[in-house]
Image (cartoon, rainbow, N blue to C red; front, side, top):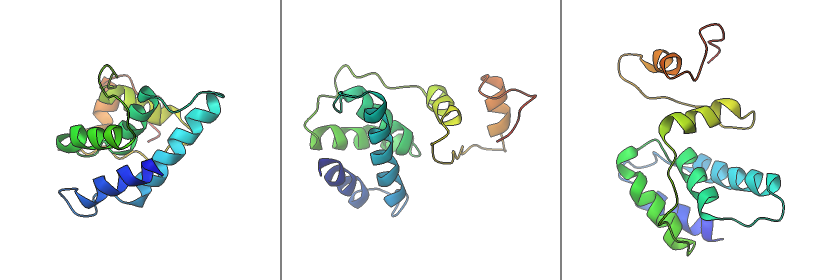
Length: 129
């Protein structure tokens, strides 16, 4: 229920109307449930929440701090000390997961594929993207 409240706050206060929608909410819940299933007996913790928010609400870097704050405050969790994953780690997680949403990389001048190769996230021999 608190995740839904946090999502609603983010949705209602986003700067670009409908940039984030229900797909982010569903994917966030699905990501958290998958993590809890893999880590049986564990409850939602800050690292799990941070990863899920970054994976599903990362499309607007200028708003990410606010989105993270809203989720942590609404769920009554402390954000301090929870590491944020860098973009390449998040992309790598997405590529490796068979259950992840489609990944959209927004770049200038069609640079996304070259960046995937340069950072070692995809091999030239397997450019299936």
